[in-house]
Image 1: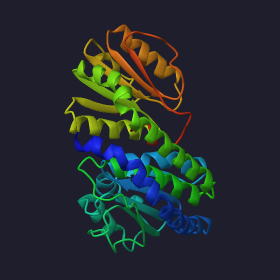
Image 2: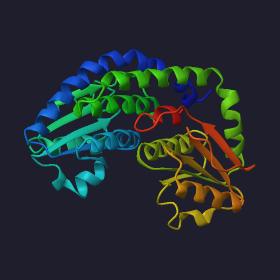
Image 3: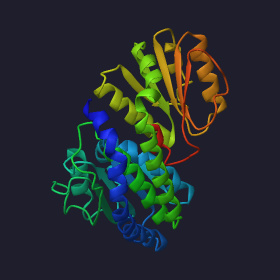
Image 4: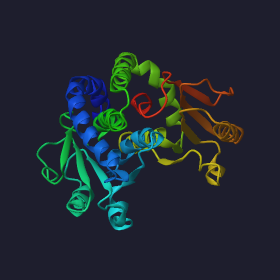
Length: 318
């Protein structure tokens, strides 16, 4: 069993064990962020990470924006080198780094000291270069991580969505219930994982190129899935925005090609692109709570629970 599958066996139980410690911490930090916005001292919230940590940030940004808290999920390197002016006295910066030693995140924390209204670190490793560089810290407590950082991605999605609810005075109890529901589903899935993943593996074995497609939180899940599939079975995988896919990317569709759609809601554009791929002889995998609007021998549906929004990646990444 490879280290990804080993992590899959208990990452949900580790999250369940760590979850009680998240609640008080996100309430404290959320109240502090909320007060800065209420007083007009903060105007934007930046969620910044690299790799899996950036992908997890994408899960929480829509919930914050929908409640009027202007939020951008960004790559630390691009923020620091291309748009450093975004980090100013009216900015709350949340730095997400599994190891706490990510060079781009550490440099960004150092740059933000004395510039940002508030800095927050989301960490898994307590002994790290990031410790002490920010005003607040939120610890994931998920234990030793592998190089693909999947179990901390899983925990980051949960913690950041709790933080989003705390900042916007949302229902933290409801968010926590949904996280626990995802943990229960994970256990059920794990107990029958070979049966459930067999058809998916068969498709991937027949694929010369796989493209993972999604938007918003599911776009982050698609990026994380691409990372896992490249690093573990060494598959040829690329990732794109599903909505951008129709603007020229889809002409690659042909036999030996597989498009994997990570969907919140299946849009008319998603359906059109799936039809195009299937008609071109490609394979399509659909991860969604909704039933596919078409049937085809080269279409594999991977049904997800009826969950939308920022917590859906807790299901789709498994």
